[in-house]
Length: 230
Length: 81
Image 1 (cartoon, chains in turn orange, green):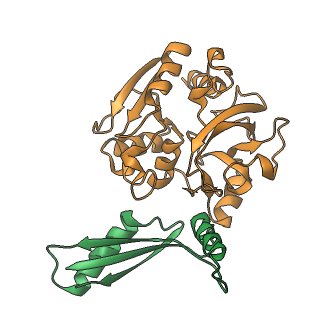
Image 2: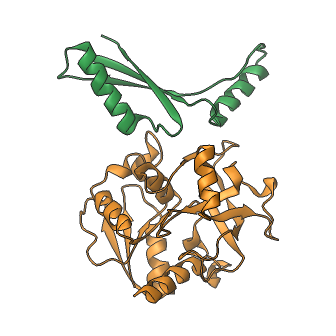
């Protein structure tokens, strides 16, 4: 499988994502500079974490107008796999590929810690190989997921909330919600399921040398789904 | 022509910055304070517009396409001169 990792000015998790899909999981990966306009033969686009354009105006608001994003939107609309991690999730909501918005954390602080996720929908292309819960490193100041009650209702009804912040036993408790996200939402997919946005960083816990490798299950899932589809 | 765009969090949207400011103000001893909302101001210099209505229309377009995220923010525009 061929991964394309988009590098915006200010992206800082692009190298980690590249390392995981190529060195840890043994697939092809290449960096795509945001000024490029063609994704070429990529099978999955990764919009990595970081601070694209210094988070000016709103997180992800300027990155959305990078030349490569037209190609990413086309690719997503044709069913191509796209994952936005952290700042990448913010870019996806600004682009309109995913609904809602990521607001300033309820406690106003930048939070850098390991959280735990419960997999709320194990049937999506991104979660088929995921265990019930995952360790999920977060590092963000704007991760509080917000959308109108209608949109939240739709997401819940359609099983599009796929990750929620939870306790180590998988319970979705208020105290396991680090940032005030509605319904403990940590990750959602689009209606077709090919676009995932999540605030936690699975590329940071995808190998045992880093203490935990449960994040790799998300990348393994999409590789599995791609191979099953091909 | 100079145009000012005000961007404010929409009613009903959680505004933790506003809450923190309200908390700070009450710590300072200010009482009788209801809700506090924090927004932002963008001043635009539109060099090719001299008609106020046309300038406001352009600024509104800029606001809805980029300056504000209308999922959670409202905006208003005014002529500065």
